[in-house]
Image 1 (cartoon, rainbow, N blue to C red):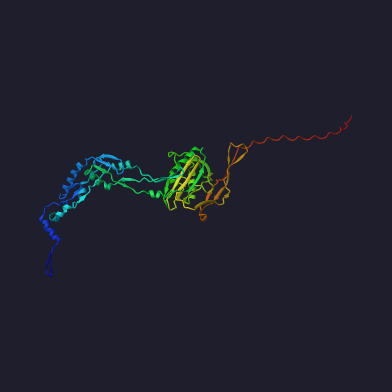
Image 2: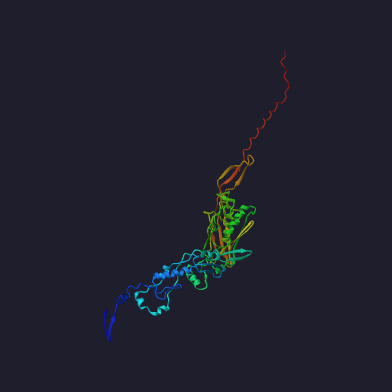
Length: 458
């Protein structure tokens, strides 16, 4: 203790440590206890030791966990009755009591009466939730992306279904409240924010572009593949700056996935393969994207020209290899909308149409170069005849996209060049012609008649 002289008297300053030692000596042997007025949930534990409080909390829970509680979900009709024990909920008495501060020895002796007016309340620590998430999923269903479709000439919006999950942090309070009040527990729910809000979805109001191609409806395997692939693209929403890959969206083309074997191009020749006809889907989408003035990040042409679009306007795809990737380069969301009809496929880009904007596609000069020629035997041909099966000239073509605003050209873009490898000219020939029979020898002309000479006489 230090003594300071001060005008008007003497001031004594004592160390708190000294006081604590004195108090400790007075209450020596007293076990540490929890702050008075404290409780966990409804269990009062103030003034108890930690061990005593844990035991009291366990005894309370043994009865409370058998209480029948009716589970409900806000704004939902789900009503199920469970006990906390059946829910797989148990209380961690050690962790719960550990939240309560322990009174120091000073506090036990010098506790102020006012503390009891301000009881310290904490939440029980609950764990091992097993069934509630299943109930939440049953009530709210699976989440789903926002989709927009074009039906009967109208834009139809399907808002995103957000994901709902159990709010674990709010559950203990809800369970204790249910036990204390009306035996009803409203399951606390967390709603994840929507990736595409309803307000953003409502910005999609116009058909920005439209493009169609035709095919033979009689070719059923190919028609099946076109219908299946185009359906997977229908309604996809692409936000500004986002990219959409054809292969990633449509997925791998397999027999198990419902695709059929149909005609394809392979290295400049006609062949068959699973998913034949898919390239007409990607080509139609590519052209609709061009006319919507979207950015095309990846596109490849076929090895040979296709009959349903002009040269330079096709887009082949092959899962794991060639892809078609487009980017929403606008400032508002867009939607890819497909429409399949027997013999006709249409893609529309839906969004916010810019007034006065017009897009035109031009084909540059087509350059041809000769290729090798090979001959192939075909026994079906008439002997000695030939037939050109494939004109294999290589062809190069450039394609341009020009944008007009209120009739005034504002820009021209050179699209990716297209090269069609003819694969060489193929000429089929039939069996050799049989040798021609030898012509009969020409007759020798006879000598003109003469008078007889006189014979030698005897």
